[in-house]
Image 1 (tube, rainbow, N blue to C red):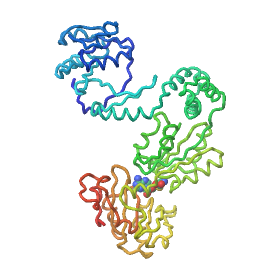
Image 2 (image 1 turned 180 degrees about the horizontal axis):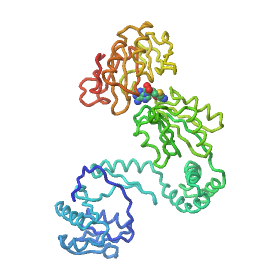
Image 3 (image 1 turned 90 degrees about the vertical axis):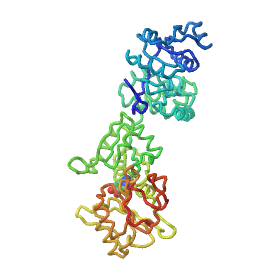
Image 4 (image 1 turned 90 degrees about the horizontal axis):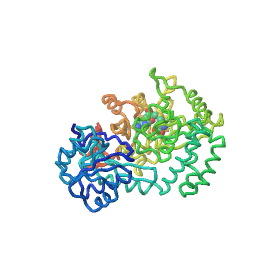
Length: 488
Ligand code: SAH
């Protein structure tokens, strides 16, 4: 079996090594570090080597290490491996290490050739530990120095008392399980404990106080259900707010629609229930009243319900209707703003929304026609120089939008742009004029979600080489994804 260092997946496992036979091949400095690590996990270690460094000799004298005083020949290794769970190969001869790793593979025992992922069937990640808590960091052997850097960063963020806290929670686990058999409520109790005074007390070693706080949580009704109305931004998960992320990690269920990319949903806690409330197969959206009723029903059942919305919940997101329904049903709620598509698309497309020279105002409008097909917009207010118009949900009506703006006084060659799938890896930007943008969009098959930006700001578009693809030579030209015809 050959493994290559570019194999995409190293599956992380935590292995019990207490009293488990492990073979180490090599008796020098590299091996000594691995033996030290293994001893801390109380492995039963044998070392094959003719010579041992001082530390190793001491461990042999102390009886914690078995020395097989032989050359690392194929025969010696073959004889020593059976019965071992892991093999560390740590001689200074790379070819020898690889040969021994191959023998271990033959015998179906996991082997790690130190600092050489290619022949290894396991690797040892960098670790941060606090008591029973262990955080392993691996780059799959690709960049050990980076792994160490990341470890330093994690070290700095995990409080010292985390081990004590985990120890407390472990000790109380059974009692809490018995007092609180319902798994959802139990999780809530623990989360309330972690968010409150109890966790700080346990971290500081005041276990009596921690127990008091826990008891109070167990005897109370527990925190009730609530709804969090959260904006997830326009698509790039890096544009989530810290608060949105925190809520995504703590919700019991998530109601989402088609604007939410899989990348964003990946950030949701693994065991939260994901409920799609967007367009169904018959292409009809779940009626708003049904969504409202579902939010209320779930909160009443005690769940923390995350209503995750593309962009910002209060910008063409029907967030207003949802909170009215919640208020009416006396369900507690929180609203968390998100980066709206206008901000995200403008920034990622390099188009400022206002500009001292040409745009002193910016207007957000919807291009979604009424049920009777009429596009009822304040045309006269929109068709003004000196401002930017951002049109949401306007792809279908783009020809009408452009024609009406021209009919109400904007020149045919007034700049306009359309940003499709803004902030996502496959973002496309087309720039043109009121006269030709509909044709450009049609020819290029622009689909939803897309945002239309109308105004002189489009002429000020600048694509930074660092945002766009690397082949950009000058900072004033468009990216290769960009079918722009009228580069400003
Ligand atoms: N609440 C959202 C808007 C919801 S309306 C917000 O604040 O952004 C849905 C419309 O938003 C889409 O039809 C499209 O016009 C726009 N939109 C949302 N995400 C977008 C994206 N990533 N790229 C372009 N337009 C987007």
